[in-house]
Length: 321
Image (cartoon, rainbow, N blue to C red; front, side):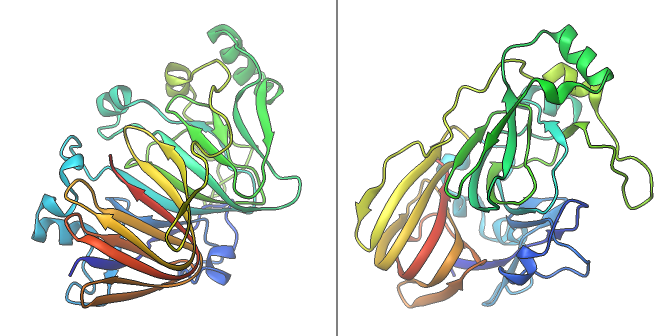
């Protein structure tokens, strides 16, 4: 078996809504679903295989049983499974936060830091997110503005539109705004330092924990340098259009807009992750056939070779280069 359909663990953070349940078929015994972890081998939420001989096992179990070759040789440089892929439904604003670099996170938290990419799946009219600073500020000003609650006066708020792409390097101050649905591809890490949380309280009635001192150590105090568009231009392929969204040392992400049959390759270098944003497909490798619809996530093992995707809709394809 080379093509695995995955069931995502879900999170009920206070800012979440219900689009993931109502539109994407996600399940959680809670009144809201903020995140679904579509490809995850993280201890805080593991993807579970549905169907076939590995039914009910986690993706981590599958990798342990079949060996690291199913990840591909490009993953050999990573100590852990390299990526974590999510759908995020922000009904309310997320906290203003920052993620540490690998060096800092491994030393202080015992896991990778977090560089991530956001693809705006959908958004309300007028929705915005926070993306770094308007201009460079000093460490002293950063500390003062945190203390006197004026940090948002110097942050960079960006209007968003469906299809926008944001590359969030570790150290970049950021916050997803309300009314935005995002596909997030990130390093395999769950380390987040909150700096500002709008005075909200958690389920226990107490203010949620802030991590101000750690944030001061890792935040980059200059404006972000990346554009908010795809890194590549749309490329016509058999069966549709392929667009490079972002490629970096941690992940390589393409958008596939298909209407027909496309041929892809999961070679010896990397697995393929397929996240279906809309539409319905059949994914075939030899005699193996797996159906996938909006909200489904598939893991195609490295070494599968050529396989086909037939159908109409949009897929986020992630691999490691």
